[in-house]
Length: 174
Image (cartoon, rainbow, N blue to C red; front, side):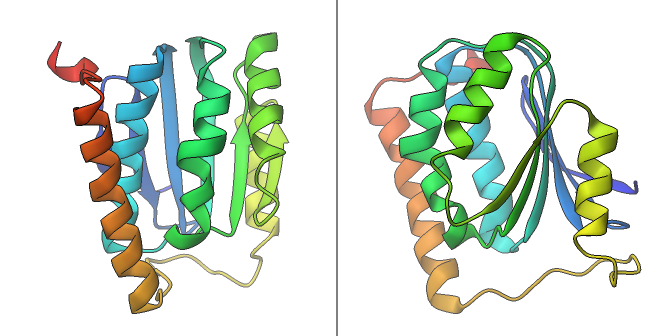
């Protein structure tokens, strides 16, 4: 992997892997719903300027996750993936049982994506690499229709406003 850091919060780091041409999203720690909400906002902001069609989401370093996260992700975050340009998602679930249950629940809500669930990063990496064997490395971002890009940017802005209006505190500023 050849990783370029795009953004980081206390619980998520987002990298562009220019060799594999995908976004690598690395989660860590004991998460609360506000932690996840603000981290998801940071992830979404990475898609405002560029479309990344493939994502490697790594939850292997998550130590705890409350049950309300999966329904929130399913209804408020993941439905916007198509507009963001994501077509494939390799998801490494957290090692504890709740992590697997959480990931399984969320991916059932994503019929428009090619999603696979994995227990380790090596399997997830292999799956994504095999899904695009013609790609030979280098920085390549797919164009996105202007209307989708504009609508997605507006959605991210509204997402930020909803969090602020709901009084959800940014854990990074607590």
